[in-house]
Length: 239
View 1 (cartoon, one colour):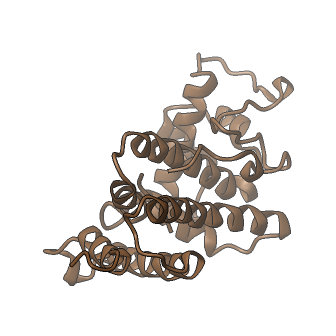
View 2: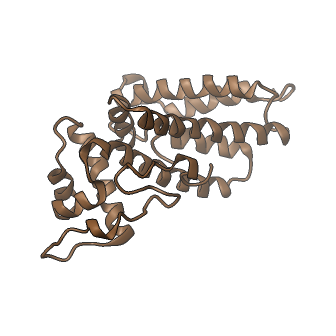
View 3: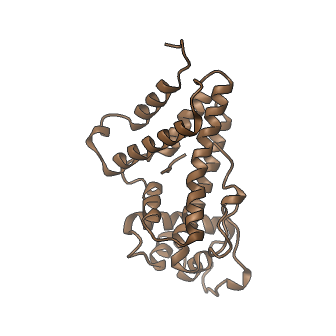
């Protein structure tokens, strides 16, 4: 499950449906109807900045407390906002996790695309894919959010959103593999099959990193994964 850092920000087809308290579009920050704005005595942050602060606070609190003990007031305190303002952005708690995860992935994919646009080759893009997919450290908040969300029971709409978010990473890797094959940088592998194995390996390594396995205390999971992928993708005759 991806956590840290090539494809557009959240595609239209991945935007959560309107029943998800507010909506997360390509920029991850659409506003709820004005009628829901609570009356607050103190001045509150507004617009995209407020939504971003609320989302980042939610990710942090979810990673720290889990979902069972999560309270809107905890998110408000972490964000330096009122509980009413948090309710404005999230509404009901039962859809909070999906909304925050969708926002997190939109933000992540935006930064991933920006980095990939500067990459000189498919090999560099593959490096970026691995780097953005794996947790950056034990307890990585984004990866913790993924585990919390996947552990919940979801209705059909929620399962569809999660499936599309996961498929988004497969599609980004497949695009890199196709480009690399067409430009002669990668061997002619079975792209769908290779993608399944690659993502499964990265997910397993991610769990190791999050758990704090000693094998990664002095070794790089990123370097290990990249070396394994490049070894299989190396074109014949390139040592």
